[in-house]
Image (cartoon, rainbow, N blue to C red; front, side):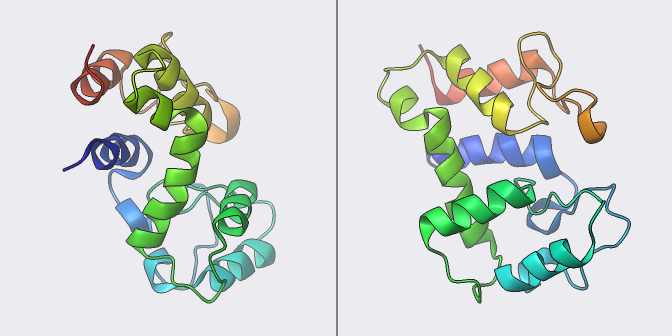
Amino acid sequence: MGRVARLRQIIGHAESRRHGYDAVQYGATIRPPRPPTAMTLAEIYQWIDETPGQPHAIGRYQFIPPTLRRVVRQVGVPLNTRFSPKVQDRLADVLLAEAGVPQALAGEMPREVLMHNLARIWAGLPTASGRSYYHGIAGNRASITWEDYADAMARIFPG
C-alpha cells in the first residue's frame, strides 16, 4: 500500500472508523435515504438542502457541505457520479494536497507541520495539545491520541 493510501487510512480511522465510506455524522437526525456510497453527489446535495439545521458531514473523510461542494467543483466531478470509495478518495486527495502532502513526500515540509495542517482539515485528528483543532465545535474532538498519530505518521514520513 502506498504512502498516500496509508495516510488516508489514518484519516479514515480518525473520522469514520465504524462506518467508513458510508459514515454520516452522528448528530444528523434525518439520515440520508440510502448509504452514501449508493447515492450520487446530486442526491447528497439534495439531502443536505432538504435537512437544514443539522450536521451533514458525510463519507469516510466526513466532508462538510462547503468543502464537499468546493472539491467536487475543483475536480470537475459530474453531479450524477456515485459517491463511491474511489470518488471519496479522489476528493480527499485534493485536501491532502492542500495540506502539503506533496511537499512532505518530497522532504520539503516537516512531518509535524503536515500533521497540524491535516488536523486543521480533519477534526478527528489531534494537534500537539492532544485536542482537535475544532474541539467542542459541533461535538468535535480528536478521536486518536497525538502519540498514536505521530507514530503512524512517522512510519509514513520517516526522518
